[in-house]
Image (cartoon, rainbow, N blue to C red; front, side, top):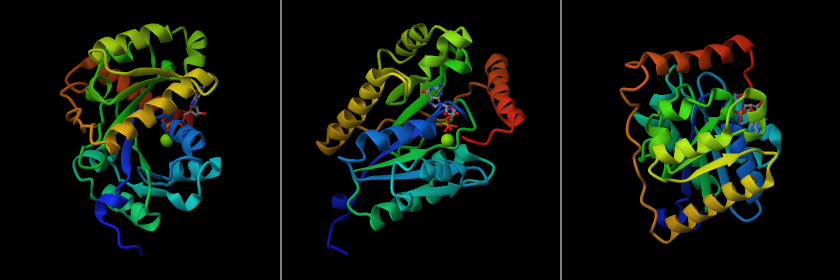
Length: 250
Ligand SMILES: Nc1nc2c(ncn2[C@@H]2O[C@H](COP(=O)(O)OP(=O)(O)O)[C@@H](O)[C@H]2O)c(=O)[nH]1
Ligand SMILES: [Mg+2]
């Protein structure tokens, strides 16, 4: 082990949150593919009872499988990224120690909830991922991740015409909800959008390294969805659709 200070081995930790199926694992695979040659990367996934996300990412072949670790969160994935981050911190620190020095560790949330956010004790910055298939009104329903994550991604813009959603309008509404904060409309089929994501990651990493990046807490799960019938119904529709499909590919 080289004699390095904790600072020297401390990677930039980037959380990726958002509802199940919006494309968090795919976005992480994309970042690994785009930046794996120039950055030393690690990934931590959070799943309720399995290591499905970690296995999907290992199978994608975008990163040395050893650099992808799974945390099994039990029933409450949002707790493991927000209220008791111990298991996640240990996984991140193990990765950083095993592969020191790392530049970037990506942490995928379990995605059980529209309003789950990461604690700033776990990540330095966070991306919140929505997709057009979740419905054009989901941005307006809001939540701390949508309004205050470091980046909002409106994913799968290629699907917009098929699901009758205006992806541009979703992005406009996202910027309004975020007081002009960054929003990227993303699709793996749109190289310009992939380049925008890549540039954003490099910019925030640069800010982190130069001490200009200030971690922001988006705030706890808002008194949002369970107080508000509309949002409540939406969140559960999402979960049920996923469960009913029997698709565990998230
Ligand atoms: N059409 C389309 N599908 C995508 C895109 N990104 C991801 N997906 C698909 O969305 C589904 C869920 O993706 P996944 O990354 O597992 O979502 P997660 O549950 O948020 O991690 C998978 O079938 C992906 O192939 C995209 O840009 N366009
Ligand atoms: Mg996933």
